[in-house]
Length: 219
Image 1: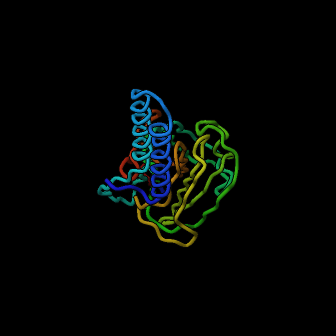
Image 2: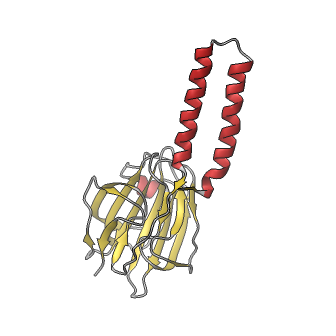
Protein backbone atom coordinates (compact mmCIF):
# COMPACT_ATOMS: atom_id res chain seq x y z
CA UNK A 1 0.00 0.00 0.00
CA UNK A 2 1.39 3.39 -0.99
CA UNK A 3 0.23 6.95 -0.35
CA UNK A 4 -0.98 9.12 -3.20
CA UNK A 5 1.11 12.18 -4.07
CA UNK A 6 -1.93 14.45 -3.53
CA UNK A 7 -1.87 13.66 0.18
CA UNK A 8 1.77 14.37 1.00
CA UNK A 9 1.43 18.07 1.84
CA UNK A 10 -1.86 17.60 3.66
CA UNK A 11 -0.43 14.77 5.78
CA UNK A 12 2.75 16.74 6.56
CA UNK A 13 0.98 19.92 7.65
CA UNK A 14 -1.73 17.96 9.47
CA UNK A 15 0.96 16.21 11.51
CA UNK A 16 2.54 19.54 12.45
CA UNK A 17 -0.83 21.04 13.42
CA UNK A 18 -1.89 17.99 15.44
CA UNK A 19 1.44 17.86 17.29
CA UNK A 20 1.02 21.57 18.04
CA UNK A 21 -2.50 21.06 19.38
CA UNK A 22 -1.36 18.24 21.64
CA UNK A 23 1.59 20.34 22.88
CA UNK A 24 -0.72 23.22 23.75
CA UNK A 25 -3.11 20.97 25.64
CA UNK A 26 -0.46 18.85 27.38
CA UNK A 27 2.18 21.40 28.29
CA UNK A 28 0.53 24.80 28.35
CA UNK A 29 -2.67 24.00 30.24
CA UNK A 30 -3.53 22.43 33.55
CA UNK A 31 -5.92 19.92 32.00
CA UNK A 32 -6.19 16.59 33.82
CA UNK A 33 -4.39 13.55 32.38
CA UNK A 34 -7.57 11.98 31.01
CA UNK A 35 -8.21 15.12 28.94
CA UNK A 36 -4.68 14.98 27.50
CA UNK A 37 -5.10 11.30 26.65
CA UNK A 38 -8.51 11.91 25.07
CA UNK A 39 -7.14 14.72 22.90
CA UNK A 40 -4.23 12.51 21.83
CA UNK A 41 -6.58 9.67 20.97
CA UNK A 42 -8.85 11.92 18.90
CA UNK A 43 -5.90 13.43 17.02
CA UNK A 44 -4.46 9.99 16.23
CA UNK A 45 -7.82 8.72 14.95
CA UNK A 46 -8.38 11.82 12.77
CA UNK A 47 -4.85 11.58 11.37
CA UNK A 48 -5.29 7.94 10.42
CA UNK A 49 -8.63 8.76 8.77
CA UNK A 50 -6.84 11.33 6.62
CA UNK A 51 -4.05 8.83 6.00
CA UNK A 52 -6.41 6.11 4.76
CA UNK A 53 -8.15 8.55 2.44
CA UNK A 54 -4.93 9.03 0.46
CA UNK A 55 -4.07 5.35 0.16
CA UNK A 56 -3.18 4.21 -3.33
CA UNK A 57 -3.35 0.40 -3.56
CA UNK A 58 -1.44 -1.50 -6.23
CA UNK A 59 -3.18 -4.24 -8.20
CA UNK A 60 -3.14 -5.92 -11.60
CA UNK A 61 -5.44 -4.38 -14.22
CA UNK A 62 -7.06 -6.89 -16.57
CA UNK A 63 -7.40 -5.02 -19.87
CA UNK A 64 -10.11 -5.81 -22.40
CA UNK A 65 -10.99 -3.65 -25.40
CA UNK A 66 -14.70 -4.45 -25.01
CA UNK A 67 -14.91 -3.66 -21.30
CA UNK A 68 -15.58 -0.33 -19.60
CA UNK A 69 -13.89 -0.36 -16.20
CA UNK A 70 -15.10 1.63 -13.19
CA UNK A 71 -13.22 4.95 -12.98
CA UNK A 72 -13.41 4.98 -9.18
CA UNK A 73 -14.14 3.11 -5.98
CA UNK A 74 -17.63 3.85 -4.71
CA UNK A 75 -21.30 3.03 -5.03
CA UNK A 76 -23.46 3.06 -8.17
CA UNK A 77 -26.19 5.67 -7.61
CA UNK A 78 -27.48 6.30 -11.15
CA UNK A 79 -28.10 4.08 -14.19
CA UNK A 80 -30.27 5.72 -16.83
CA UNK A 81 -30.56 7.00 -20.38
CA UNK A 82 -29.76 10.69 -20.11
CA UNK A 83 -29.14 13.65 -22.39
CA UNK A 84 -25.44 14.52 -22.39
CA UNK A 85 -25.45 18.23 -23.19
CA UNK A 86 -21.80 19.26 -23.11
CA UNK A 87 -20.06 17.10 -25.72
CA UNK A 88 -22.27 14.46 -27.36
CA UNK A 89 -25.44 16.57 -27.22
CA UNK A 90 -27.55 13.44 -27.45
CA UNK A 91 -28.82 10.63 -25.27
CA UNK A 92 -26.29 8.26 -23.72
CA UNK A 93 -26.32 5.61 -21.02
CA UNK A 94 -25.23 7.26 -17.80
CA UNK A 95 -23.67 5.46 -14.84
CA UNK A 96 -22.83 7.54 -11.77
CA UNK A 97 -20.57 6.44 -8.92
CA UNK A 98 -20.66 8.19 -5.55
CA UNK A 99 -17.34 8.23 -3.70
CA UNK A 100 -17.55 8.58 0.08
CA UNK A 101 -14.64 9.92 2.17
CA UNK A 102 -13.63 6.35 3.07
CA UNK A 103 -13.19 5.28 -0.57
CA UNK A 104 -9.92 5.33 -2.50
CA UNK A 105 -10.16 8.55 -4.54
CA UNK A 106 -7.81 7.73 -7.39
CA UNK A 107 -9.63 8.10 -10.74
CA UNK A 108 -8.80 5.65 -13.54
CA UNK A 109 -9.53 5.63 -17.26
CA UNK A 110 -12.41 3.24 -18.10
CA UNK A 111 -10.99 2.51 -21.57
CA UNK A 112 -7.77 2.82 -23.57
CA UNK A 113 -7.50 5.41 -26.31
CA UNK A 114 -6.78 9.07 -27.04
CA UNK A 115 -8.18 12.04 -25.10
CA UNK A 116 -10.38 13.91 -27.58
CA UNK A 117 -11.86 16.45 -25.16
CA UNK A 118 -10.87 17.77 -21.73
CA UNK A 119 -12.46 20.76 -20.04
CA UNK A 120 -12.59 22.09 -16.50
CA UNK A 121 -15.64 23.99 -15.19
CA UNK A 122 -15.76 26.07 -12.03
CA UNK A 123 -19.10 25.73 -10.27
CA UNK A 124 -21.16 25.12 -7.16
CA UNK A 125 -20.62 22.55 -4.41
CA UNK A 126 -23.97 20.81 -4.15
CA UNK A 127 -23.96 17.43 -2.42
CA UNK A 128 -22.56 14.90 -4.91
CA UNK A 129 -25.81 12.91 -5.19
CA UNK A 130 -27.88 15.99 -6.09
CA UNK A 131 -29.39 15.61 -9.61
CA UNK A 132 -27.99 19.00 -10.70
CA UNK A 133 -24.45 18.30 -9.45
CA UNK A 134 -23.51 16.89 -12.88
CA UNK A 135 -24.16 20.21 -14.59
CA UNK A 136 -23.76 22.86 -11.88
CA UNK A 137 -20.92 21.71 -9.61
CA UNK A 138 -17.20 22.18 -10.14
CA UNK A 139 -16.28 19.45 -12.60
CA UNK A 140 -13.91 18.18 -15.26
CA UNK A 141 -15.19 16.46 -18.41
CA UNK A 142 -12.91 14.06 -20.29
CA UNK A 143 -13.69 12.10 -23.47
CA UNK A 144 -11.52 9.18 -24.59
CA UNK A 145 -11.82 7.67 -28.06
CA UNK A 146 -10.93 4.03 -28.68
CA UNK A 147 -9.04 2.99 -31.85
CA UNK A 148 -12.37 1.80 -33.35
CA UNK A 149 -13.88 5.28 -32.93
CA UNK A 150 -16.12 4.55 -29.93
CA UNK A 151 -16.05 7.39 -27.41
CA UNK A 152 -16.65 7.29 -23.65
CA UNK A 153 -17.14 10.42 -21.56
CA UNK A 154 -16.34 10.53 -17.84
CA UNK A 155 -16.84 13.50 -15.58
CA UNK A 156 -15.23 14.25 -12.20
CA UNK A 157 -17.68 16.14 -10.00
CA UNK A 158 -16.85 17.93 -6.76
CA UNK A 159 -19.24 17.54 -3.84
CA UNK A 160 -20.10 19.60 -0.78
CA UNK A 161 -16.80 18.61 0.86
CA UNK A 162 -14.60 17.80 -2.15
CA UNK A 163 -13.26 21.05 -3.59
CA UNK A 164 -10.01 19.85 -5.09
CA UNK A 165 -10.39 18.16 -8.48
CA UNK A 166 -7.09 17.05 -10.02
CA UNK A 167 -6.64 15.72 -13.54
CA UNK A 168 -3.42 14.65 -15.24
CA UNK A 169 -4.40 14.37 -18.92
CA UNK A 170 -4.88 16.80 -21.79
CA UNK A 171 -6.37 16.62 -25.25
CA UNK A 172 -4.26 14.46 -27.55
CA UNK A 173 -2.80 12.32 -24.75
CA UNK A 174 -2.88 8.54 -25.10
CA UNK A 175 -4.23 6.75 -22.01
CA UNK A 176 -4.16 3.10 -20.99
CA UNK A 177 -7.20 1.31 -19.63
CA UNK A 178 -7.15 1.52 -15.84
CA UNK A 179 -4.39 4.15 -15.82
CA UNK A 180 -4.71 7.00 -13.33
CA UNK A 181 -6.09 10.17 -14.88
CA UNK A 182 -7.02 12.17 -11.80
CA UNK A 183 -7.91 12.46 -8.13
CA UNK A 184 -10.69 14.12 -6.14
CA UNK A 185 -10.01 15.05 -2.53
CA UNK A 186 -12.72 13.82 -0.15
CA UNK A 187 -16.34 12.87 -1.04
CA UNK A 188 -17.32 13.25 -4.69
CA UNK A 189 -18.85 11.64 -7.77
CA UNK A 190 -17.86 10.37 -11.22
CA UNK A 191 -20.32 10.12 -14.14
CA UNK A 192 -19.69 7.86 -17.14
CA UNK A 193 -21.59 8.29 -20.43
CA UNK A 194 -21.67 5.29 -22.77
CA UNK A 195 -23.21 4.44 -26.15
CA UNK A 196 -26.89 3.46 -25.87
CA UNK A 197 -26.14 -0.09 -27.03
CA UNK A 198 -23.64 -0.73 -24.23
CA UNK A 199 -24.45 -3.73 -22.03
CA UNK A 200 -24.57 -2.59 -18.40
CA UNK A 201 -23.02 -5.06 -15.93
CA UNK A 202 -23.84 -3.30 -12.64
CA UNK A 203 -26.97 -2.38 -10.71
CA UNK A 204 -28.00 0.53 -8.49
CA UNK A 205 -26.36 0.10 -5.09
CA UNK A 206 -23.46 -2.04 -6.32
CA UNK A 207 -20.01 -1.28 -4.91
CA UNK A 208 -17.31 -0.60 -7.48
CA UNK A 209 -13.53 -0.83 -7.49
CA UNK A 210 -11.70 1.59 -9.75
CA UNK A 211 -9.81 -0.19 -12.53
CA UNK A 212 -11.29 -3.58 -11.59
CA UNK A 213 -15.09 -3.55 -11.70
CA UNK A 214 -16.51 -4.01 -15.21
CA UNK A 215 -19.24 -1.39 -15.55
CA UNK A 216 -20.30 -2.29 -19.07
CA UNK A 217 -19.44 -4.09 -22.29
CA UNK A 218 -19.23 -2.28 -25.63
CA UNK A 219 -20.46 -3.68 -28.94
